[in-house]
Image 1 (cartoon, rainbow, N blue to C red):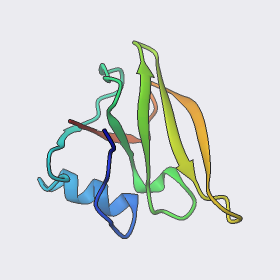
Image 2 (cartoon, rainbow, N blue to C red):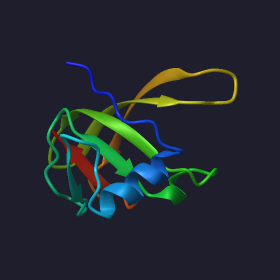
Image 3 (cartoon, helix red, strand yellow):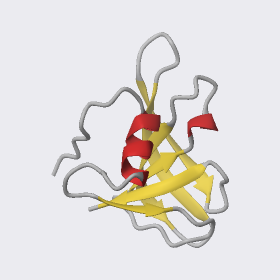
Length: 101
């Protein structure tokens, strides 16, 4: 099925709300610990200082293992949106939490 997150001002707001015990309905928030096991179909929440604008970032996990997390994500480079697939190390210091179904 589709994943529809509620409209929020930014990914940073989504992270703050989740950390304060108010994740989106039907989702469970877990603080991220470097090296923890991530399940595919989870949503990574990044700290607000992950990007220059300071509004945070989210990414949908497609694959994960002990050392790498592969994601699909949307980025806005200023001239339109595009889909960007990539990988992060499980020790990435900017990952703040995980939303799971």
